[in-house]
Length: 605
Image 1: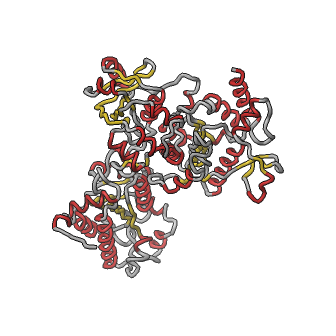
Image 2: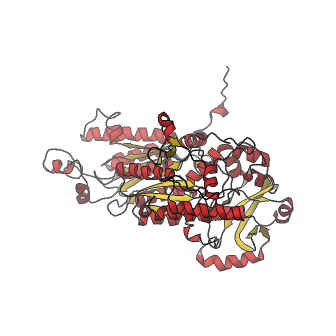
Image 3: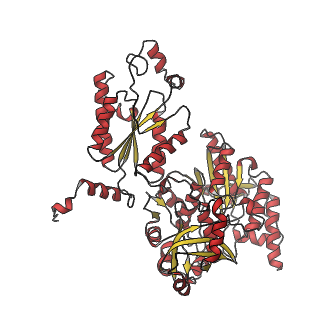
């Protein structure tokens, strides 16, 4: 093997930074290495803020690392004490380490008292002389508050003379004269402090605006609604399908944050080939959100700066600065579904759709309403987050479903809540989140499923006081492990921290062989490896079946196989159609009645 290095191939420091940024997924945003230096008294909240900031950044695909006393004093600086000379050397070493992290493209966050202005200035000079951004953040908290927070009793020992040279008591702390940011940690919440730090990093070009928006809704401001409606009347029109309109709802409510509209070609290619958007860190997005158009519509609209999207005669959105690109359908379906079988119901729709895709930002004048009696359950991510805050829940676990709930599902949801309570969470809350967009013809309709879910709650099989029932507006793809990542990420956008993944999530039988199209265990395995989903903990589904000995649903144990009865969907439909009832304990009786009435009605029709 012969390696050749030329002067051009070695590159400048700036080009090396750019390449490092690309290696760790920071493509369009470029190099983000910098140092965020938190300084303040002991007990001011520096470490809490630093780890909260690290969690925020890492959760959005930005590499970050916190240096604090625990990982520095016990290793690199374990030979240093607390004399003025040792303190100066402590900060010098930390500065050098932080510079190396930052030079590697990482946001280095330091959490140290660093009481002397001279030392902090030297840290700044060290970074800036290497072309690295340095931000001094003063975590400002009155000493009285710091003493109240002092669980280790250090201030008490210092005042008693047991500890000598303690900063703020018998050793000076030199407040920054001109910090880049002051964080009033005794007055602001941790989230508010993190938000202010993130705003600073955006302003200084370290982060992009899109990376820092938890939910990007695409509704126009209230004072622009009437003007936009008038504009929509005058623009060229494009009629869209039911599924297209459902995607407009998904986009406008912020479920696909940070997308600002239907995917342009670069976003589509990243989604299709990487399963992620890479322009703003690493954003998991495995499902193409695209708008197919016919060749005739493409020719009619390709020179327009904007046009109106119309569904069943109603203007629902304006698409601006359109970009048309070829709809390579076989390539798309092969990547998303792993098959191009035209008998797959969603693949069939794709293959029959337009030969072009059009991407562009959309603006939506108002919420999409379906006026089917279910709009009260269609809560946006922002509304769900507000509901979780109102209920005081710090742990939300989501359950995605497109089928009726039986007591095996309920068993898993109940056990998940019990587990979270044992882990110390005060108010775990279930987000019961049935999919409400397009589904295949033989699935139970949404209205029937919602009535069935309400019956389950009324009978107390699930605790209504600790459950939020809401509709997820996405259409169904039946794309197995590819789609389950989309389902998972959208619940993260809505504020969930835990996600229950079932057997064969988003799967269906193969159109020809009738066997599972996807391995039933792959959804769970993929979610545990998927990039960009680190803020969600995956709760694996445990298989439940009817325990004939106990007379109720129970977790299946292979060593007692003969005691269990697996009631399939086909058997359940047969029981309902023929007026039979399942064994006691399989499903709440009133919930079963909802299903039975539905199946008998379609049998008669």
